[in-house]
Length: 359
Image (tube, rainbow, N blue to C red; front, top):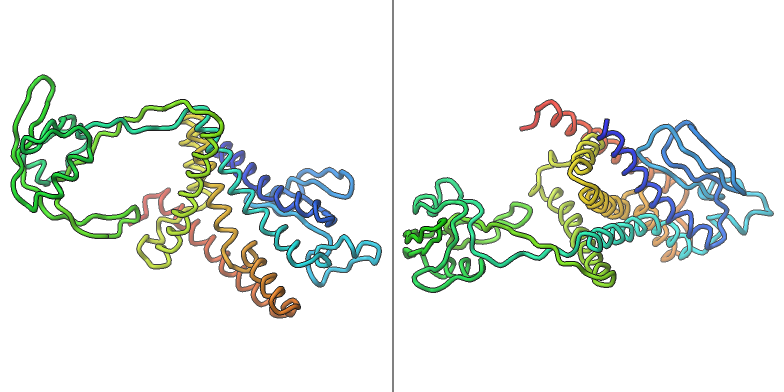
């Protein structure tokens, strides 16, 4: 129940932020907004305020802002033509469409800024304590254990983990004598690094280097910072996740990351519940990550998504006239089929995980 509730609140907020971007810029450019809906399908609740009807609809997996003259075939009274979306200059229409996903990205900045302002900026404490020893590794064969602190290698002092990494990488495969602090004991152990593949965050092999098979014990401290530094850190965190999201899409297309890793609403609901149990800041961090995903995915050049509309408007700007209605309809159907297929696939992945059917 917590998972479902946290999912509805989380998704509702992200959809609201997205649609608010479209809504505010439509209003800014004088476009008449007929409906602002959270959700699709039958109306659950509605209230007319001015010229806009504000709705909560039955299916919460999305939302929409309906503008006057949004579709080329829409009939618009002569008195309202100046306020029609299709009558606005193409650059204004592009901004209205782009505002939704851009609001999601800016919302992520605000979320991360809030997290850093409240919790502080995480700093990794320098140290050479081992956090994990890989099984069947040279380190395991040498007798190294998690919790050991590497004091020196071949008599040269190691004060930070980078010292350990550099000395192991430069050994060219010869045996190393490691001075270890284990509790109150000081030990000398001999290990012989071997060449092992190094992988990036997506699991791709990017090279080889000499390794012992150990990883550091991460010990974080949180440093209190001001709002200015928190905002800069929030921007940096958002940019990092934007890059990783784009690269993740590329790696899925390249089959580097298996498509089975894709998750849908069920998986999101599970993760939202887990993050909420871990604490509000964890939940906000997950919301920020999801907001970035929503923003980036909506900017993809797929018909029916915001990015697809931006492609149409870009072509209109170059050609000095819009694509024909029939061409737009064909591409919209293609986009609908593509997204429908993707939704079925991620639902299958979710169900397969739920019932342990994954490989």
